[in-house]
Image (cartoon, rainbow, N blue to C red; front, side, top):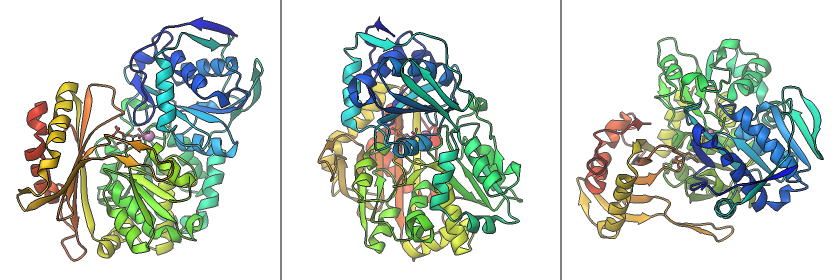
Length: 540
Ligand code: VG1
Ligand code: CO
């Protein structure tokens, strides 16, 4: 065990979901070490405690994991539980923290960001409830990174992580476990696998693992447990660079899946997850379910699924997520909450039992079974609901809109934008907000315009500056915020939403339905002219 002198790095502030930087930044001498030591210094319970450790297998996972193991040993961690070959999905880590009553978990991932030597790397710290560390903890970690002057590390050879079993590093016990087994057990407890098996008998599905972490999980569930053919899982082998792809399950990056689902001979069901397995998308033949709608469907039909047959106490969504799930909650007579972007804000509500289901427009949904979003869980929820209702994806969503109306929804991302210009858009709109209320644009009149602050109803903490929202009397709205996960320049996100009551036209083209709102947003916020762009980089 040795102590190594070091000096602080600027900018080790965790964003929406952990610290994310280019691989080349993480490769700088002491960069990773400084951040990891700051975690150990800020979370003293880890000394003498249990740590869960694993990552999505992206480039540098194997190197970083050995460093973290040696640092855990030197910082007095009693036991580290690590996935075979250093692999765990994000939801699997959340489950294992809870299962083993661990003091925390470290997940090596930059989620949906590209990997490889020129790609991104990241590190997330989750606390003892299994969820992303609360802001107070990430603030403390950041504060520590600014003053750090030494780190502790054990010397020695790399540990062999390919064999399941127990070994030691100094006084620390290292348990290498199968990354999939406990996750599968948890899914078995929540879902009616026999009903899903009956549903899929003679039908085809296509799950796109995008060469990321869910390959082994999906094969265990769909091929081994449900007996579906091998080709039900595509891109199922995790690769350090995700096969050169971008493991973000949206219409642009999951093109292979979308092409399959929008072909003449489309399978009955399609789905995908992201780099670290916490996101999901669901498709039927020639139909793609908007993630915001998906959350609403899961909430409306939760009692069809064994794990939720007694009903759910409440739901929550991140602020930019469409309000489709609010409509369901009102109908069910349960509580509903609006939180800032990022899963850490759901933790208190879940721990307090106020909600049992939550989600984000960015393809994240989950329940109180863990404290992270969970891609395969959401996909199994859908399959279980389809099985219970004896319906197709298209029938379920059509029925949903007929019952609750439809929230047309889209996100327009402007990536790699000059930071000052992106900030100019935000400050320009911020200054205008108050004067906007009561003004009319086209057919819309603004009823509310503010900078979202969240008051946590459980611990009373307040989080300011969580996005600018402009709402219209019609129920439509737009939201603008800056991403906290990008690594190049700034990413500006424009979220558009238009509510169509159930008696209205429920089958419009999404971008056409939203065009007036997009035009008003541009008129008010002047995004394109301020950042010198003609079009968004990505529309989802
Ligand atoms: C994005 C999404 C947000 C999500 C976060 C982490 O954050 O918008 O909803 O929680 O990514 O997801 P941002 O700040 O870039 O908008 V993951 O799958 O990257 O852990
Ligand atoms: Co993710």
